[in-house]
Length: 335
Image (cartoon, rainbow, N blue to C red; front, side):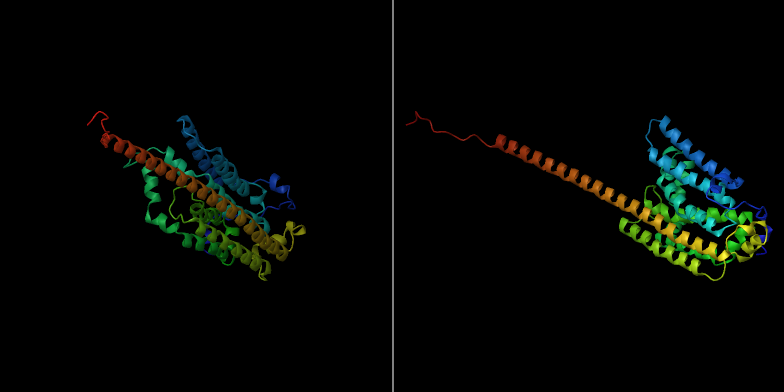
């Protein structure tokens, strides 16, 4: 904790009004670093879309909406709105932020296919340039290891346990730097896990649909078990920080630490299973569409082979009829 103390302290001394759902939309507090980073990422994506359209190429509007509105919009909302304002005051509000950053945001960023967009718009020759650098990164050993499905799943499962049952969460409550890095970590680990499973972008680590569905199914009991563990935990997570808040002016409206933590565990359990089931449905729909497309391609291939076989049979009959000598007929005047 001595190392964490060297970073900028997180400002938690301001007394906030009683939390209500309406405060999510009225109590905004921009994080300069995360806000600027989100604007840059969103801007680069939109520039890529504009470049494609000016070139006359098509880019699905659904992908743009998924990345810009649902993905980066969700990131900006939970790191700038009242969710961000109260995320160090109530662990239940923090848990909403956690689930959005670790599941919702990575899911929709992946649906936006930014890697595909970058490969189609970045300049560069076969030997140098930004496009070449991106290809080198995608085919690097580091990318292959980080996107290895079992490893990505393990990181995704272990990270929340490490966050809530170590000094990491306490550090995020007292240091701006650790707090911001926690947000980035949640999105990064979620992206490493979800991106290859969706399979839209040409990233390493993609596996067959049956294995994808199994991995998503395995996250459901994980969220349930972690949520129940937090709900039943006798020790309060971040107890020193939350107890200090209740000794100040906010103590008049803050719920008990135990009840707030119980609610946080329930949010993790319910939202994790809900978003996991949505993702499961997305993958299953992709699998069905992929199977139908493959069936259509196979039908067309068989039709072409039948057409070629029929054309070859007709050609062979013609050749045979031409090469066959005419049959001699008896001369009626003979003899």
